[in-house]
Image (cartoon, rainbow, N blue to C red; front, side, top):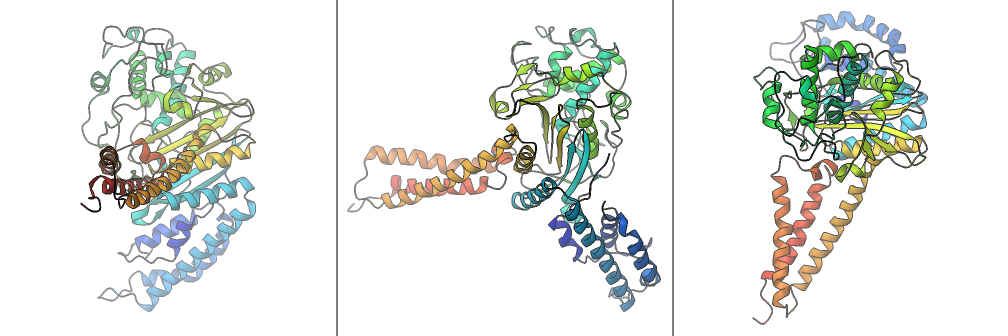
Length: 544
């Protein structure tokens, strides 16, 4: 897939000047920190054309490097030769990174420049670890940008080919697998799932659930236990056992939209029981490999990955879910871009027919609740949206513990964008990038960009809370305060002071996701207003 040059984010440039002491690598005489810097530098797309320059520098200093590898004093101080070696590498790194940045700036379109600026600014302001972005035009990837850090603690920069947990972006890919089986006669999307199930049976009253209802989240199932995570190499329940514990009906099948991880886990079980094959192996052969998603897998492979970060910015250990269809896919941004390209009109089709792809993207059920702020409906594995100019868009996002992902595409024109992040604080970043992308294709901001409205509302609420607090402190000095006012102020004070402490104790709140940088300010302003009201309720009146 064609890609453009990688913009160099400020975090990447900053680490060039950082010397990190460490044991010597016997491979080439470089400390591990310098080896990482060298590898990150030399593999940046856009610097390949300076290989001749770097080869010359290497040829000049290679003898020095080899001598320096064994030329440290007994007390750990670098000798002049070792220092000269590191200085030579520093010069080469600076040359490569600076030339790369110039090339990126010269060849980038206004949109890619804008996306780069937005990504760099939001990563810094929101405390996001890193992100990779792919831009699609006319059904092809035309630009890829890697920003921030794959592992901030070890100063490892993000790269274009980084492997991510894409979380619930697994669902549209799994939907392709189900449609592939349907088109080849191995799965009936309209038949009750009990026809296939052999390792677990549906409870009474759920026998009308079909694969198509599972694909469109209209089977009436609850969300499920999205926090059921397990170490990759440790014990975990089998899929039938997990579904047996997680299964719960909240509505009759076919009566409306109810987003459900359990539903897609059940779909995985149906596919395995119908085909007598492992889900990951089948998906790899039938979908991932034919689409060129060479880095993608529904199985945990142990491959090197960035470090995920939770809503508080803490590193997250590797984990897997009991089910894979609902959120178990690992993929690079290029893999997801290839998947998106395959869903565009006019794309070469080796997995599904044009009719099959159109069926996956055709709205099946209207969405409601919070989903209605960002989408109009849900198809089979895809959210759907009508853009401001009347065009049809499909998309899906993913959020898991420490990871976030998003793909948005307009099949009619081949426009699309893929965003993957190793941080759970990335929703405002995604919204800002989607706003920029929407503007570039000539439409009003897509629904997911409305996350930014929450920031405006939060800033207004912060200002209002501070004003209330100041007015309350002033009112507390008034001589006469009616009893009813004091009681009401006390109740309000308890709520305004209490909720930030309650929120801080929670593992996850939707508020944390959409306001990762602002919610502590919102909580602090609320507590200040509460203190002011508490003064009205508790301070004695003058003269008493």
